[in-house]
Image 1 (cartoon, rainbow, N blue to C red):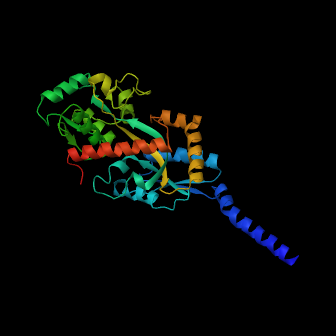
Image 2: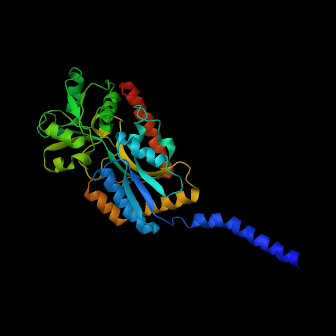
Amino acid sequence: MLRRTLLCTALAFASVAVTAPAMAQSSYPDRPIQMLVPWGAGGGTDAVARILGTLLQQELGVPVNVVNRTGGSGVVGHSAIAKAKPDGYTIGVVTIEIDMMHWQGLTDLTYKDFDFLAMVNADPGSVMVSVDSPFKTLPELLAAIKEKPAGTFKASGTGQGGIWHLGLAGWMMSHGLKPDQVTWVPSQGAAPGITDMVAGGVDLVPAALAEGRSMIDAKRVVGLGSMSAERQELFPDVPTLKEAVDSDWTLAVWRTVAAPAGLPDDVKAKLEAALEKAYNSPEYKKFMTERGFGMRWADGKEATRIVAEDDATLGNIMKEAGLAK
């Protein structure tokens, strides 16, 4: 009788030992989640993170705290996401700069250090000119760029080697031109670049149409072409580069939600499902549309493919343009 009792007790303890980890995983999340943002408060990435944090909090039932970790041209925040414990309690917004920083020699960090959960936004680049520009169509502008000596035209919109600098270089290369056919004038972002263009300081800005929306609405800037496969919903009158000048070049800045590599499958599945619900909510669509942000959904697998493809493309351009280290 005693032996039977001891055996039953041992089996009971074994059962608890086996089921406890499963119970712990199934209870995820049971405490607050931290969402890291590699860029400053008040910017576009911060805004997207905060609306997503609010919607995820409603879906997951725990606080989702957005924390800005800035510095090092994005290296500090991206590193903090990648080096966190892969338990689902630290996630973050990874931006296209992850496909540029390591080519620039700023870090050894790459997209392979993350488990991507979803792409939630993408804003294609474009070619914008001032309304006072003598070039009213993209074919006219491109013909002049080809005809004049290298360096005749100037462009701006990011720092040297920034995403829109690469956007311009890629466009030039798609026409068989050198990546520096148009001289790049560094700026602190698209807005200062557009202001400089309107003042006559540069000839074009190859940034996202969303970044020029206020100037476009004010009839001070015109979009001549979009670096997208299809016309953008918010800017239906702007042709794609393919339509306008038969260029296959496309490029968009995007925002993805990611976790450190090694996330448990069940936690990953729960986060992906919650993100998809947040993305499809009326609140998210209203928020993004009102601010002119492009809607783009890709699940974890597709987001990883897009990020990997952009990494190779941007690396090639940076090497060709002498911007890689």
